Amino acid sequence: MNKVMLLYPPGKLLQRSEDRAQCNLDDAATGAVHACNDLGYCAAVLLQKGYEVFLRDYQTEKASFEEVEHDVRAFRPDMIALSTTNTSVIDDLAFLDRISGFHKCVNVVKGAVFYDLEPELLDQLHLENADCLIGCEMEFVIGVLADFYLRSEGSLSGVNGIFYRDGESFIKNQFVCGLNDLDDLPFPARGLMKNELYVRPDTGEPMATIQTGLGCPSSCIYCLTPIISGKNVRKRDVESIYKELEECYYTFGIRNFFFKADTFTIDAFYAGAVCDRIINSPLHGKIEFTVNSRAKPLEPWLLKKLREAGCFTIAVGFESGSDETLRRIKKGTTVEDNLRAAKMIHDAGIPLFGFFMIGFPWETEEMIADTERLIRRTAPDFIELHVAMPYYGTGLYEECRSLGVLSGGGFGHDYYSPNTTGTVELSNAGILRLKKKILLRFYLRPSYIAKKMLGAAKSSVVRKNYVKYGFRLLAKNLPGGRRRNG
Image (cartoon, rainbow, N blue to C red; front, side, top):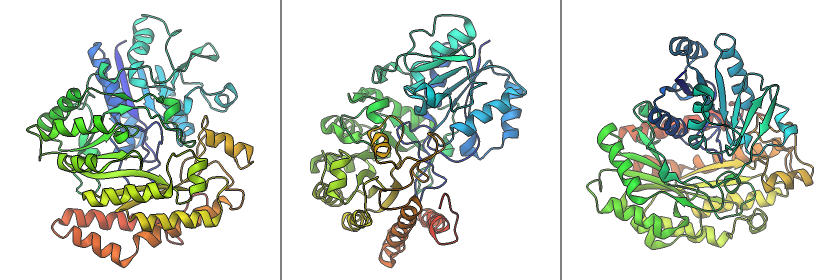
């Protein structure tokens, strides 16, 4: 009773490690899947406790269910733990049902979709073969769950952020976010992860995820972060981050990194300290990394330090070109703040990835046109354009409900197929058509294509990857291309 199988099920390519967004990469214009750090952390915790662990990311490997069945029959786990998303939870529970048809064990399912969920929503799900649902940070409770279920040690009554089966029903424990100290965790068990699956989009080289912090003090009404991670920013010790970088570089040969935080630059002095540790180390000039940011706070001195330390791109959630929308979503920024941030990033010489969002329930076509104008004015190197998705528990969910634009059930939706009818003025199909037009008008500009090809002149690999992403964009957004919900 000491074998635990950790997995991402086969199916759509989803950002399962990103609880706050759970991005559907199959339908995205750009983007690359991040490493399965949630499973990696759980594996490291379980290994410390003496459990035998099997870890596999079937979705990113594009593996079949037959491969899952082979592995389950060979490993014969006592517990299976998988990571789910709002998009995939119905399919993932059906996946567990299929496994339970030939192998009985304890089944644990983790996902932000379960965070403090109301009973009437939980009742919509088929949970016959699930024993425990984790809605908080999986890596901090997996050891307790394994000890309880597999070694009959301890109790589940005080475990934060879970539902656990009691006969035919589930008991809901307290859900309190932001309790855990990230420095209490061992490094993810990268020896069990297929690190070559997770690559930097332009060069195709392996890229590891380094968790630097959790939590965000902002109040954006569409974001799950303050709900599931808390408003208090929990930051890892800088030396611990550096030691993990060393392990990745020297043990696993990884030189590209995603510094994962809800907002890496929210504390400029902390972000600067991470950069200083790299700059003053033997790894300086040998590694590169990408980070995310808000438009405010952001200062030129930090951007300069980021570039010196090896930052190869910075992703900023600009969201909207409408000041009214920015105010209503409680972004804490204005259009002018967005323009200022973009100029600072360009001046620092760091490539800019802009995230934008349309389809908030009050938006008009003119507001969406304002966002397209902002895209042009901020001049990002790459963009992703999402349709506003009202996740349960967010202020946007309540806003959509009050305006009568919620549609369908609470599960099976994402930024590319939201659970709304559209806005008060635009249909969901109309918003998706506008989204495709904006993406194509941005990426198909001759000047843009020429600039990217010129910038990749010295690397055939980068040119090849740019072309690959270009064809992917066309396939998903040209008339007659792959469509989803209109």
